[in-house]
Image 1 (cartoon, one colour):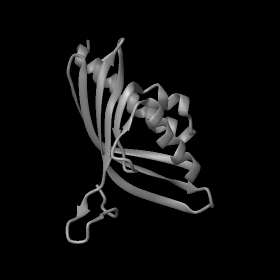
Image 2 (tube, helix red, strand yellow):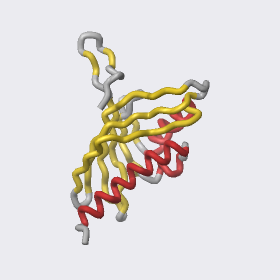
Image 3 (cartoon, rainbow, N blue to C red):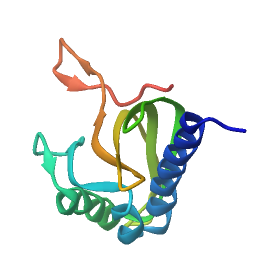
Image 4 (cartoon, rainbow, N blue to C red):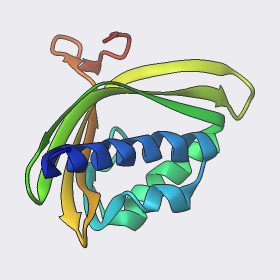
Amino acid sequence: MPTQREIDEARIRQQIDKIVEGIRAKDLKALEQVYAADVVSFDVEPPLQHVGVTAKLKNWTNVFTFFREAAYEVRDLTLTVGEDVAFGHCFGRLSGTLANGTATSGMWVRATFCFRKIDDDWLIAHDQASVPFDIASGKGVIDLQP
């Protein structure tokens, strides 16, 4: 019989799967269900932080205007799960067909997710996506592979 921690980890992994599915379907309602109302997101696009689920969904809306078809891949997801908080990190890649018909393999980002257990649901309270940068040029390095 699985422990509560194993059950919770499986439920968190299902939430990450919902993000992948929501992006592929361009389904904002599905994505909204994985975020806490007061989520704080340090995403790759400005500003420095996006506060609240409405701001987070605006980011996804922007993505969906650039992509005719979108896909998201997660690699090497590692989770640490407590009673009512959890965190995880992975590599993520957004790819697909742009609105102009050009296919793109996207770029890999480093992703961190922090979850809170709210009313027995594991919701993302904080996320961060980043790329390394080259100190000499001050530019992001976007061609690295996990």
